[in-house]
Each structure stands twice: as C-alpha cells, then as structure tokens.
Amino acid sequence: MSENVVEIQDLWHWYLRGTPLQTVALQGAELEIQSDDLAAIMGHTGSGKSSLIQHLNGILRPHRGTVRVFGNDLADPKLDVRPLRRMVGLVFQQPEMQLFDPTVGDDVAFGPRQLGGTPEEVRRRVRTAMERVGLSFEGFKDRYTFGLSGGEMRRVALAGVLALEPRLLVLDEPTAGLDPRGRRQLLESLRTIHAEGEMAVVIVSHDMDVVAELARRVWVLAGGRTVMRGSVREIFARVEELRELGLGIPQVSELAYELRRAGRDVRADVLTADELAEALWTNSTSPAA
Amino acid sequence: MDEFDFARSVTVGQYVPGTSVLHRLDPRAKLAAFVIVLAAIITSDSYIGNVVGLSAALGLVALAGIPVGYVLSGVRPIVPILVVFTVFNFLFLGNYDPTGSAVLWRQQVALGPYEFNFTVTESSMKQTVQGVVRIIALIVLTSTLTLTTTITGLAKGIETLLAPFRRVKVPGHEAAMVIAIAYRFVPTVADELERLMKAQASRGADFGRPGRLRFVKRARQMIPITVPLFVGAFRRAERLIMAMESRCYIGGKGRTPITLPALGRRDWTAIASAAVFTLAVWNVPWPL
Image 1: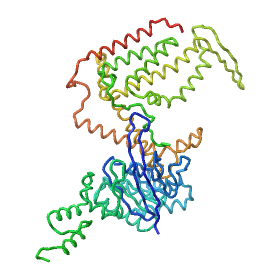
Image 2 (image 1 turned 90 degrees about the horizontal axis):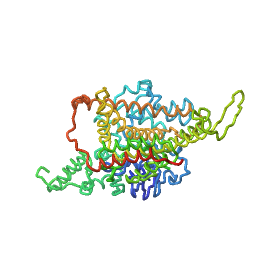
Image 3 (image 1 turned 135 degrees about the vertical axis):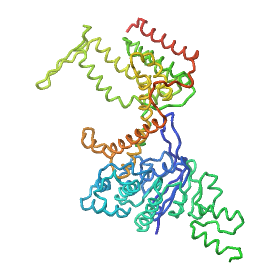
Image 4 (image 1 turned 30 degrees about the vertical axis):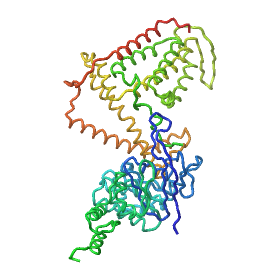
C-alpha cells in the first residue's frame, strides 16, 4: 500500500526576505509524493523547482502554507530537522562540486560517520551505496577523488547521499552536464534503486527525455506555482500547454504530435520510439498495412 | 528560521538598483564626495561633530532610498569585536593619556600575581565613544557608496581618482581592477558557501552550535565546506584569467574609455556640498 510521505499545500517562500532585494520564489506550490513514487518535477529555469525540493528536508522552511514530510510539520519552528535529513536524501545540482575528501571511500563515509555507527556499519553502508551507483567498492574506495572523471565524481556524490539510506531520494538536475554514457548509467542506477523498493525517487529536470524515460508521475511548476500534475503520459499529451510554459516535450512525443498534425492517426501519449513505431503500424492507413 | 539565507546579512558588495540622486551621480564625483565626507567623520574631534557625521551618513542612506535597517544589518557581524574594543579602550586607554586631562575614575585591581590599573580620563572617554561612533558611521557610509554604485562605476571612479599618482608609479588601473574583482566575487562566494552548507547538511553534516568555545570541533565542521569552496574559487579564478587573456587584456597601459562624460552640475554640487559639510564639521566650535 502506498501512502503520501510528502504533502505540500499552498507553499510560499521568499528569498532575502526583509531586504530591498527580496524576491518571491514560491507562491502557492503543491506537491504530493507517495512512499513508492517515481516522480519528476519539471519547470522552466526560475520556476521554483529547486526552492520547492529544498523544503523536503528542512533546508528551507515554509514562509506560508503547509509542508508535511513523513508526518513532520516543517512550519513548526521547534521541529528538529536532523532526523528528517536522514530520511530525505537531497542531491543538489552538480553534486560533484561538494566532494571534499581526497579518497572516494572516506567521502562517501562522511554521512554514515555523522550518524555515528560502528566502523563495520559505516563500511557496509559505503559498500552498498557505492555498488548501487555502479562503482565497485574494492576498485574505487581508495581512489583519489579529484582525479575521477566528471561522471564518476557525480556517482560518488550520489553514493554519499545514498549511504544515509534515505526513504526518499530527491535529485536536482541529475543528468545535467553528463555525456550520453554517463547519463544512461545514472538513469539506470536510479531505476534500479527505485526497483529495490526501499525508497521513493523524485527528480527535478527540464530535460523532457530524461523525465519521459524515468518518471511515472509528473508535477509541472511555473512562476512558483504548481500548474500541472498527472501521469507522465497525460502530461506529455498536453503539448500546447507545455509549449506555452516554455517547456519542450520528449523528441518522440514531438514527432508523434507533428505526424498527428500532418493528418496521421497516431495516439497522443507515445513516449518511446518503440511505442511510436507500434502506434504507426497499427493505425497506419497506408497501403503497406 | 531562514537557516541558510546568508546573502541577507552580507551587505558588502551588494548593489541595490534605484533611481535616487545618489544612484545617478557620476561614480567619480560620488567617490570624491564620499572621501571628503569620510575625512570629516574620521578626523572630527568632538562628540557632537561625530554624531553629526553619523547623522549625515544615515541621511545619505535615506536619500538613496535604501531601508536604514538593511544598512545597519551590515554592522551586526562586527558588534562582538566592537564590544571588546570598547571595553578595553574604556578601561585601559586612560593609562596612556598623553594630554593630561582630568582623571574621572581610577581603580587598581589585583588578579593573582597580576595588577591592573583601570583609568578613565576625560580624553580617553571621548576617544572610546568616538571610536564606536566613527566605526559605525564609516560602515554606514561605505555601504551606502557600494549599495548605490555598480562595480564597474566604482572601478572607474577609483581609477580616475588614482590617475594623478601615475607619475609616482601607482598602478591606478590595476588597483581598481583588483578591487572590482574582489568586490564582484563577494556575493558569488557567499552564494557558493550557502550552496555547500546546504549540500553538506543534506549529507548529515551538523552546523549547529557545539558551544562557542569548542574551536577544534567548529574548525573540523568547516572542512567539508572550505575544501570545495577553495577548489571552486581557484577554478573560477582560472576561468576568469582565461577569459581576460582571450580578450587580450594587458592591464591599464594605453587603455582609454570609449565614453568619458564630463561631470554635470549635479556632480559638482555633490562635491561642493561634501566640501562645505567637512569644512563646517571642522570649523564649528562644537561645545562638547
């Protein structure tokens, strides 16, 4: 049974509140995440995506509205957010910039050590986390952190968060700046992590192909508000609305959309190349059928 | 509540866009006028003169249309230093008073094998109080200057004011460039610091208070922040060098601005008012 682990209603947040440079980041955002969710938050640059997810582990606190995460009310100033930060693993944009320890194993171990487990427990967590992101524990634990490639560094940073063994994993633009191979590996890791069934996964992205490939449910933000929500198929079928928001759609959906406009009878909710081929084949009115 | 909103307390290096008279002054004139007012504030040698200086600085903040509270929030970080400085000055400065002014209070305190003399004289009292007022006025005045001036404007102003010293080999352009770059990166580094603290807090780092005196623990907590902060700063510096070199930057030699507008009436008025103010503060026989 899945239950809501995150419930956000009418969330408002201002940056530099109380100074002449005050700007509003969120104005009435909403979000719900279930305990086995695989969701994506999409939106244009400046739509409030990053601000929204920073509320999930108490990095930001709501200025107005309600944020409940695993039953904790974030609006309560007396709430101790430290236990929450262990349950919600937040991976920031370009997380490879946050690495600091010269050896990979020690960097990944930073979080577990803060939790204060035994050396064996720390070792187990580091091993599991590294293997989950496709880095072999024996092969990488003593490598020099700053000598790794960009894609490897990103996976190390991801392992650093996974080592906390959170129940909700949130990633901000996880594939930005990766080459196609690094991107594919990362998405594969995320899919495996979700399939293990221990944590809900939420990604923030404006790369529609990544969203289409990975997510099941989608939330769309614009101007600090939640403007669309639904299954990934429902969302990408609403091509005009997405375009109006300045968002693209996956390349395959775009092709299907243009074919439909050109008069071909193609269903609206295709996401992958195989689906499009099948849709074209079964609905084809050409003599070849 | 806003645990990581650092930029809020960093007023140094920020620019608040606006259309006030102060915003519209030519940066060269503005800088000159501020230097003149600054001279009045740091040399005035009476209680009233210093209070007048501080009021003038606050008046300029109001003129710029910037909330006074925002400017004063830039003073907050130095309050602890200011308190220590004031207490020590108050207790000990009188011991070294060369003017021989009247002694107001004297006390000898024995602490184990040590003996301390606390002396407050009329002149040391004055210097202590003036010290505090001057520092606050100075911060308010300089923040007002930087809050209303873009970095490029400021750099141009500094360059112009230093130009006469070129004969004695003062590298005016280079100095202006260094100051401009340093200023430019204060908010950037503050942003980066904020991002890193958030990221490490998300990995279980605890930046809570381990107690004010546990320096080692505090320093240890900062390692996950300082290492990537410096790595990032060096990377950024390298990129900046590359960008400057690829634009054939060779320093100030032979460089001239495309446009050099003459100072207008408003600019001369500002300089003149600053001069009048300073002469007045110097020459009025303040009763205190």
